[in-house]
Image 1 (tube, rainbow, N blue to C red):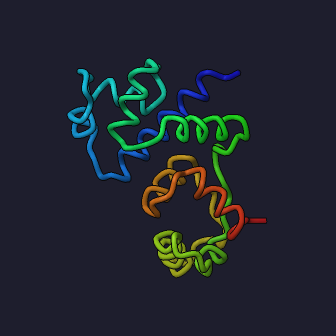
Image 2: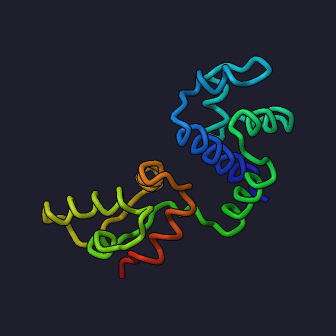
Length: 153
């Protein structure tokens, strides 16, 4: 079992929940019952520091998230390697995808195609996370959808 992979996946999930609420780290810290610095929260989100079970439950409560559901998503990501280092995407297929949740990604793909960019683009994890946040989706869900609608050959 790769504990570091679990910690990184947990951190990504916590960060995505916070970002979806449009909260800064300081704003989330203010909603916690115990003391925690924004710096400590950042180390949880990057997966460089482990949090206790109690702190994890406090974070979930502040983010209005089910600890069970969050851990299930984290486990699925690690167990199924759903977070690739990068993903090759066909921009033409993405620009034509008809899924409403991909509207921001479609707009980006249209702009890239209009700039005469290559039809396929390799997106690293940071780009996938940014695109997921833009679309309001968990990164793992965006990756799943992109694999369905815009796989690059």
